[in-house]
Amino acid sequence: MGTPALDAQTLGKILNALNDGVVVMDRRRTITYLNPAAERMTGWQLGEPVPYCRFCQEREVAEGEERCFLAAQQAIDELESEMPTRWGTMVPVTMTRSFLVDVEPKAGHMVITIRDATVRRQAEALRRRAELHRRTLEVLEAERRRLSLEIHDGVLQLLYGVRLGLDDLAYEVQGVPEKEQKVRHLIGLLEEGVGELRALSQALYPPALDDLGLTSALRQLAAQWTGRTVEIEVVGAFPPTVEAALQGRQATHVYRIVQEAIHNAVFHGRARTVLVRVGCGTCTCRVLIVDDGRGFDVRRAAEASGLGLRSMAERAASMGGRLWIKSRPGRCTRLWFCFPRPEPPEAADRCDRLCPPKASWSEAAWASRARGDAKGGRR
Ligand SMILES: Nc1ncnc2c1ncn2[C@@H]1O[C@H](COP(=O)(O)OP(=O)(O)OP(=O)(O)O)[C@@H](O)[C@H]1O
Ligand SMILES: [Mg+2]
Image (cartoon, rainbow, N blue to C red):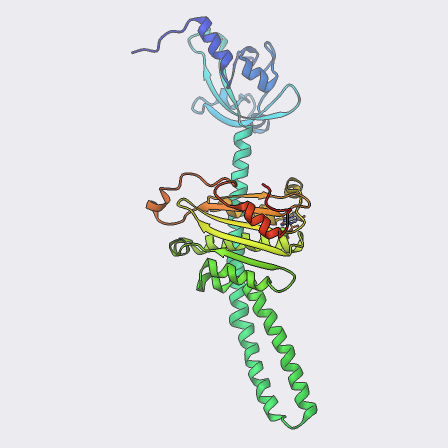
């Protein structure tokens, strides 16, 4: 069955309604027709010449060769480039070309369609940036882990040896108070250094993540802070199947998000209490972090140069998850982070969508508990 013929009026309506620009030009590149979409995109007018796209402007051509790539190349009928507009700007476009061979063959009419590629290019750029960030995080984590092991297995073992030597020395100088005191002093300094190096090694890569699993590693993280100026409590747990299914990299993402949220709460928010609640529904795993600090303007912070908030969002996205932050000056800060349950397909199939912030979390109770006063509890 052949293509049904369209009358001129219907054809005109279709061309007017198209989102893609359609431009017909003659051999001298004079526009003989353009639809409204093309005019909107480029500002070109009937009777004007079609300017060369950026690619054609910049490409090298031999003397006498056609500059317009699409006009010169019979085999290639699609091109990604940028088109100059009437307003002196360039619009990224995807172009296709065909020739109107049946109509006025001598006039050599060429038809180009142009599609505005701005949004697609922006989306691609964002995707590339996210991918780059993901890889950077991976490299960073691998490097942190290497450094952590290097400190643990290298310099710390060496210092443990020195400690044993000093213990021997302390034994030998027993009864010579002046020497004994010096050796004890050296042992004290050494222990301090060893303590700091161990803390550094664990901060670079918490061994509990591998040894005890994510929930325990989070509890250890909280314990490291607790007793200073802040109380940090981790409530709930990831089910064993989730802990087992979370690959090392994913567990590290969750750990780092909580770590950064706590760090921000303590250093920026001056929080006295931070509550971390973890758990899973049938579809998603969730982490909620509430601090009773002084809050902040989330929109303004997102535009600032800090990496923490951005990095948290990128880590969440790289797990197929999402992260929300709710805060404002003078109020507590709430951060939700959801990601799909990582178990094998039969469980994953149940995952339809990520929870929105207001899903079944009793966040109000959490907020008021974190605040410890009447300020919390409001959504
Ligand atoms: N829990 C919080 N309480 C109060 N202010 C916060 C909190 N979290 C973030 N902020 C504000 O948001 C800003 C941006 O945070 P972000 O973690 O992105 O960067 P940073 O902590 O300043 O630097 P970086 O994390 O790169 O070391 C902070 O400077 C702070 O003003
Ligand atoms: Mg930060």
